[in-house]
Image (tube, rainbow over all chains, first blue to last red; front, side):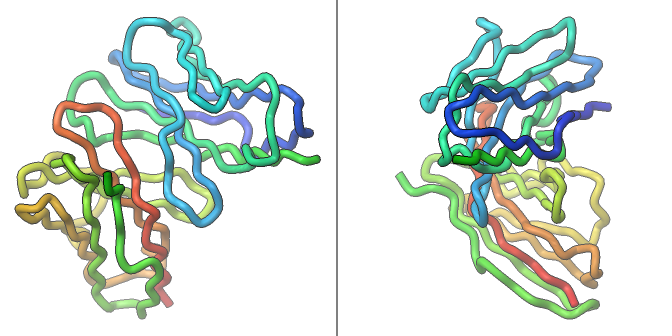
Length: 115
Length: 112
């Protein structure tokens, strides 16, 4: 069975500092990987995705994530965070076979950016 | 392009009652998935609908049921509500064959 582990439930960081949110997954088959962001009292927004090809994927707002198959990881990074990045971030996995609706989410990491 | 919308935004029900939550999919999307997000947890997959039929189900009891309509909108019905059903219910839409899912703002259900 698939599972997703987000190793940090909360990450406090100062503005303009770098940040890494860690995500590890387990699966017996190939997977697709996603990061979603949830701002307070809102739904989930797709931040970035790994489907195939280059293992380094980037979002439009400066986040990037690298798929590491040998370590079964998909860590999210940003070199310099802003106050507006304060939110909860969810890592999710979907198997490359079977129902595409079955996104498996981690428990989330709350990123708190302080001035 | 209209995004995914859900109604109502908040709902309070009593244990044992029944509830219906509604979702309108994003324009051009024909597949709808429902998720339950309990407080402090990640979303959990309930089921998915495609062409008005259930197309995959997570580990939820039969009292969780759904419908999809010809215009691709969807309903989630929960019977015999329990206190543990209190959660944020998220609807996501996608195109069949596409891997990205786009989420609505959710319905916050409180069961007392």
